[in-house]
Length: 613
Ligand SMILES: [Zn+2]
Picture (cartoon, rainbow, N blue to C red):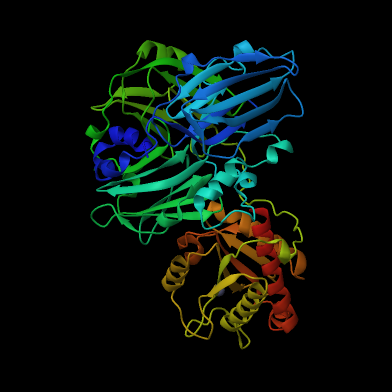
C-alpha cells in the first residue's frame, strides 16, 4: 500500500480519499512481488508493490565463490513474496540465477549467480528505479538499456505475452492476483527465450471530475485510442494488462455526462471506455514510475496537482532504425511525467515537470532527420514537444526504466500497402482443445417487418435465422455461451442488437447475412469487419467458410456496417452467399448448405479462440 504515497504526491487531489489506507503494515520492508530476467539485456528486475524502505544498493556487497564459479549478494530488509526463483540457461556465460529468502529474521533475500570464466562479475551494476531494483549483469548498452513500451499505434499482438498469461489449472481463476503471480512465475523460460516486457496489473481506479487515475503494479502501456459514436466514446486498450475483477465493468462518473468503464477485453488486454462528447480532449498522462496512468480531459484537469517543474532535457539523439523508421530519444535529469497525444498528423508530448531545454542542441540534433520539423515550446506548465508525422505512420513510445528517458519511434507508411489482409489457411482445431467458456453473440440479420433481400419468394431473414440457430446449437454443444439477438421472426433494431451485445459483454459478435446483387451472376462468400481488432476473427471465420463452402471466395472487406462498427468487442458480418443468383439461392435454401455454413462458422470461431490464446 505504500506505493500509494508516491502517487499521492503526483495526483494529490485524486487520492486524498485513500490516505487512510496508505499507511499499512510492512513498514520498512522491501517486499518483492515479481522477479523477471531479460536475456536480451542481461537484466534482473525485482519489483515491489510497496514504496517503503528499499535496500541501500550502494552498500550491497558481492561475494565471489568458486567450484562452481558463482557470486552472491544479499538484500537486507527484504521479503520474497513470490516463490523462489531458479533460472537456468542453456547457453551464454551466465548459467543460473537463484533468488531465495535466505533468512526471515532478519529478512534477507539472497541472489546467487552462477557463471563461467568469460563473465566479468565486477561489471554488475545496481539501479534503483522507483520501487524496482534493476540489476544489470552486463554493461551491454551504455545508455537506457531498459525501455518500457508505453504507447503503440500497432494493435498487433506480436509483442504480447500470451504464453505467460496462460493460467494453469492449479491456479484459482477467481483470484486475479494469483493469476498475475502465476504469469510472472512461469517456469517456461527453461524451454524458450525469456524477454522482459510490459506487464500491468490494475488494482485501483480513482475517478474525479474530468479524469480517472488507473493505477497498479508493473508498467502501463496503451494502444492507439479509438473513437466510436452513438454514444460518442473514446477507447483506450491496455495490452498485457490484467484488471482486478472487482473493478471490471463498473461505471464511474467523470462529472457531467462523462463516464468511465474498464473491462478485461481479452486474456491479456484491458479496455478503457470513456463516454463523453469531448472525446478528443482526453489524453493519457503517465506517472514517473509508469505504474499510474491518468486519463484526463486536458481542459478540466488541474496541473497544480503535478508538483515538479524543475526538470531539464539534458540529452537529444536521433537513431535511424531502417529506411522507414527513426527514433527520437530525449534524456532528462529527473523522471518524466508526460502526457501523450497522437493525431493523424502529429505526436504531441506534454512534459509537465520539465521546464528547460537547450534549443540549439535540439535543433542541431534533428536537422536532416525525419524529426527536423519537430519543435519544443514552453507552456504554463512544462514543455510541449510537437512532432509532425506523415498520415498513416506507426508511432511507438518507450520510457527508460528510471523514467529519465523517452523514446519516440516513427515508422513512415509504406508507399503501397495492401488494404485487404491475406486470408490464411484454416487450422483444424478440436473443440476439446479450447479451454474456458467463451461468450458469443450470434446476430441473425433482419427479421419481422425487415425481410432483408428477397428473390423468387425466398427471404433473407429466414435463411439468416435458420443458419444462426444452427450456429447457436453447435456452439452450445461445444461449451460456448451464446446470445441470440433474435430467435424468431421478429424485428430488432440495429441499435438494440448493439445494446444487447454490449450488455452481454461477449468475447465476439458474429452477424449473419445473405447478399444480393443486381447482377444475377454474382455469387460467393464475404466476411466484413470494421475495427482492426476484429481482423483475426474475420480471417479465422472467413478462411473456414471459404474452404468448406462450395462457393467463390470473395474475400475480406473493411465495411462500416452498423452492428460491427458500433459493438466494442471483435465483431464480424458474414455474407453467406447471394440470394440473387439462381443456383446459390437454391443451395442457400437447402439443409446441407445451411448446416455446412453453420459448421464452417463455428470451426472458424474455434480456430480464432485457439489462435488468440
Ligand atoms: Zn442483410
